[in-house]
Image 1 (cartoon, helix red, strand yellow):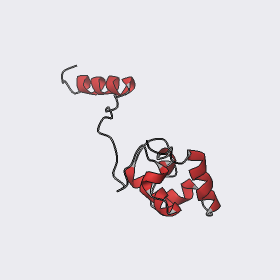
Image 2 (cartoon, rainbow, N blue to C red):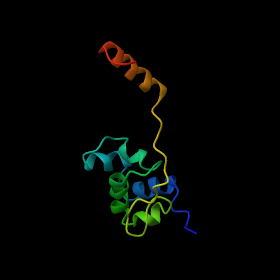
Image 3 (tube, rainbow, N blue to C red):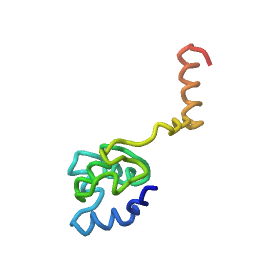
Image 4 (cartoon, rainbow, N blue to C red):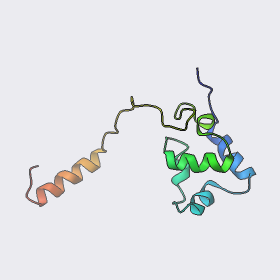
Length: 102
């Protein structure tokens, strides 16, 4: 059984203790302010790697349910996200306006 990993609040606290914030760390790496915050909720390998490297903690220790010991994303059993209804409606409208099939 895997260890529970770090709680997202503990990750944020550790970053603050080292003298920065998620937003500042994101900007230092050429990313938008919210990018690293999103990586606390779901796996985003590049963003998670930035956090792990900054804290000097392996990916699999921070997020054992997401990454293996080599830092590879676990899974394959994840289902693709269903597009939002608003996106589907917008695509249908654009196709209809372009003369395509509804």
